[in-house]
Image (cartoon, rainbow over the protein chains, first blue to last red):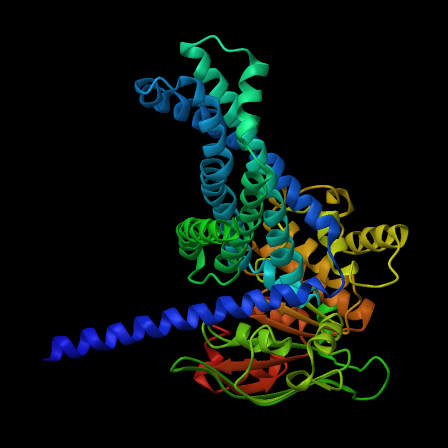
Length: 262
Length: 256
C-alpha cells in the first residue's frame, strides 16, 4: 500500500517536472522570437558563431557524408542487381540521400557536435559566472549568447546538409565505380534526372527546423544548467539526446506534411 | 598611510548622500533561509566590508543588489531607484552604474583581454572605436596591466585575472562597486596588492563599495566600516578597531 502510494507520488512529481520543463522551453522560445525585433541585432556575433558552427563542422560532415554515400551504394547494389536494375542505382541513391538520409544523418551529426558543444560552452560559462558577469554589466546576455547561437545553427545546418548531400553523391559515385566503370557526367545526369524541386525544397526546409531545434535545445540546456561542473556534462548529454530525438520527430512531421502537399 | 586614511571616512562632496539602501531583505532557497532580515545603508564614497563565514549569505546579498538573484521580500533602493520595481531597460541602465567584481573574475574565456574590456562599452550608443580603445587602455593602465591587452584570460595568473576583472568593472565608471571575495585564492602579497588597488579605486573615482570577504586583512585595508553577517542577519557593525574589541564570540572568531 505504502509502496503504491510512493510510486504514485513519484509519477505525479515526474509528470509535474515534465510539464514545467515544457513550459520553460515555451517561455525560452517566446523570448527568442521577441529578441528578433529588438536591437542590438548582434550581426558580428552571428557571423562569428556561423563560422564556428558551420566552417568548423565541414571536415566531420564531409567524412560522414562520403562514407554515407559510399556505403549506401555498395549495400543497395546487390538488391538492385537481383532485378537487373543496377542502372537505377545513381538515381535511387541520389533521391534517398537528398530526401531523407542526408538531412537526418547530418542533423544527427550536428546534434552531437554542435548541440553538445553549445550546451557545454554555455553551461561552463554559467558555472564560471560569465553569464552573470554579462548581465551584471547591463548587457542582454540572452541576446548575445542564446539568440545568436540559435540563429547561426538554423542557418548553418541547412548549408551543412547541402554540402553533405553533395559529398555523399561523390561517395556514391566512388561506390558505383568499385564494380562498374561509370563516367562522372553520366552518373550525375542519372542522379539529377530523377531529382525534382519537390524532393530538394522540402528536404532543405526541414533542415532549418532541425538546425533551430539543435540550437534551441543546446542553448536551453546550457543556459539553464545547474549543479556546477557536473551540470556541464549533464547539459551536454541531455542536449544530444533530446535534440537527436527532436530531429526524428520533426522528420516524421515533415514527411507527413510533404505527403499531404503532394 | 593608505590604511590610516581608509579608517577615517569622509564623504567626497561633504554630505551624507545615501547611494544604496537595503531594508528588511529576505531570501530563501527552498526551505533554507539564507538572508533572514538584512538592512543596510551605504553613503557616497564609502567602502563597506561585509564579513561572514562561508554560507552566511554574503554573495547572495550582493547578487540581490543587482538582481542577479531575485529577493523574496524587502526594499532595495540603488542610486534612487527601487531595483525591484523597475523594468528591464531601467534595470540594465542601473546595472551600468554598478560594477561587480566576481570571485573568479568571470572573464569571458573566448575573448581576449581587450575584447573583455570592450564588451561593457558596446552597449553605449555613442561609442567610437578610437574612444573605446582609449578607455580600454586607460582602464588597464589603472590596474598596471596594459601589457596583457591582447592575451587570452587562460594565459593570465589568478592575480592578473582579478586585476583585469577590476579593469572591466571600472570601464563604465561605476558609482557603486560590489566586490565578491576579491582576494580569495590569492597569495598574501597579491591579496595585499588587490586590497590597495580597491582603496586606490575608491579615492580616484569616489566610488562607494561593498566588499564581501572573510579575509580580515583585506577588510582592514579597504573598508571604512565593517558589518558582520551571521546566519543571514547582521550581528555587528563598526570600524576594524571597534570590532576587534568586541566581546561577541561570533565576532571575535574573525580576529583570531
